Image (cartoon, rainbow, N blue to C red; front, side, top):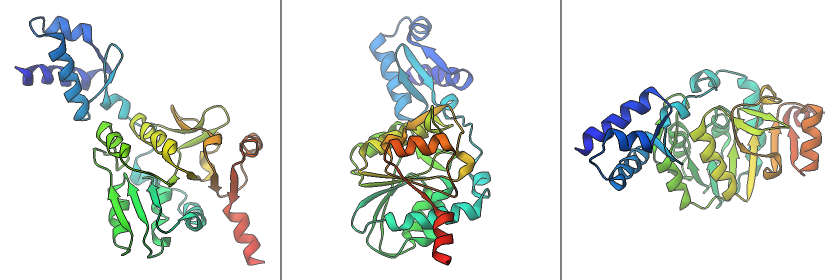
Length: 263
């Protein structure tokens, strides 16, 4: 029965990162190859597998993150994140379609969001709830698989949801930025979704504390030449400064701006 076949594949993907079509055809020789491929399609829709050339990759292994868990990140560099988040507020535009990332820095931005008619789309259930409490903003929560460590929705269902969403302004937060790798993260599914958002957005605003500078994680979701604004809490390392200038990125040091306002 199809349930037995799918359970066999599911168990294999729980234990290892890849199952080939050859293995599947050998395991179930009396089932047509088309039917077995449909089983993989089903597991991809449920977020348990990612179909690739020659077979299926385990979503579990790809989802394992090299980032710290969400609740751990929420307690790190809190004051810096608040300053960066406050500096990003002027880039909100009433009546625009705005994507709101699930990063911990973005969570610090929510108390600063004015009660205006913004249209937000987010992958973060926590952000969606807090944004909805403001009053006037319209909030869309992307559907799909909820990552326990990231507290964010990702996977194929989330990607398909975004296909029908127009994004004017995207507020994103990386786990790392380096000259060689660009903006990176430790979770494959999350980075694939961010990549799709960047490709759609007219304006990409990146929020990053300096602990992420000169840091490279496994998956790149965009490069500096795809970003219009980068907010951080100090001066970037020299090589990154030079690359940002060459890419015409507007780099805003929120600590420098605070000092100038106090004078």
